[in-house]
Length: 70
Figure (cartoon, rainbow, N blue to C red):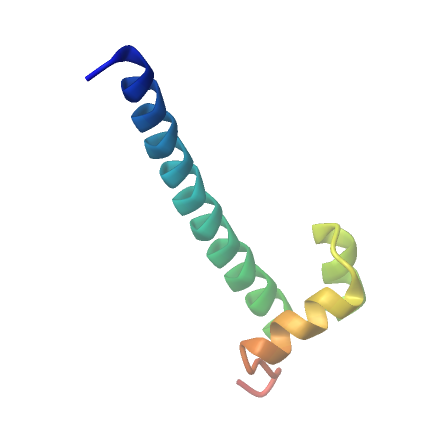
């Protein structure tokens, strides 16, 4: 195996690890948003705290079928 092939394999492995980390971080953020909403925090405040738009937060909550009653 050449040095160039090793470099490419290393880069692919690094990208896969980074993608897994991003997915885990998104799952964690989603859980935190759902928990904050269920605890009574307004959507606008959650959006402000996360740097996301109100629409993004509402869409996430709808996608997770979250309500304060849950």
